[in-house]
Length: 358
Image (tube, rainbow, N blue to C red; front, side):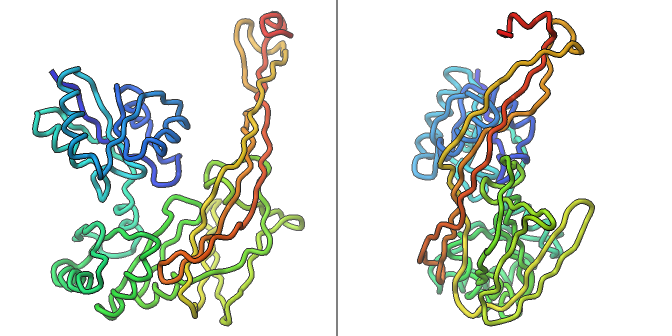
């Protein structure tokens, strides 16, 4: 007998994209094979999952995959495979374990969810009826040029992954090798600073080199869950604002549009240097909330009612990381945000007060 191997997709930035089925599977299996157990443990802690973890990454997946598949057979257990973000095996580890399971006749089931390549393709504005995915391209320039020419001769739309540290170098080579090629470059998908640049390779290259200075920004009172910690901003007319400075020698064009309750702002300008920016955050402190019980005669006897949703307090530092031609040059502290904690208030009937110490 053998269990089932579940290939589980996880969020690529926004934890709200985690599917209920994925949570259920990660809770139910005997073991989770994770690309980086530290990253996956943060995810499982967020969803209250205490399933044991074991590492399965690109440096050990050949041997580890065989060993885990054998364990599934011997112990008749279910196992889940995850990567740090997105769908396993798509330019991520996992192939070794899946191959080992298939070879032994172990059922392999996909738990679908986020895939960065498909997300980026879906919003590119290109004709997606025919495309090919190439993963990461060669780093050496001669090999990269040859690969780009072969791709251009083979398919109308190509999808690739690239590190934020090398994306400028890639776009420079695309602009040189395939002049006039249209490109769509997406980064930080599903996050606060999600960005997609569309245009010719040369136009996208110019936009990637932006670096504006933030001059005024206020965090929310409590932590927000729709963006990474420390990367929110409060705008309250007449009191608080979010401001940035045009520190380039060229004018900027600000384009704003409203759709439902969402305001989208795009900033277009000209860059004269090779500097790109990546924002990262670090939680440096937490303040746990307390649970407070209060009496309320309207609450049925023997039941409780949460009247105030709790918030954990956080202290978060955000850093601006500067890269020149893909090489890290400097890291600056951009901001320190302090979010208040808020106690959880639970109402009980006065008849039940004694059991809650009231």
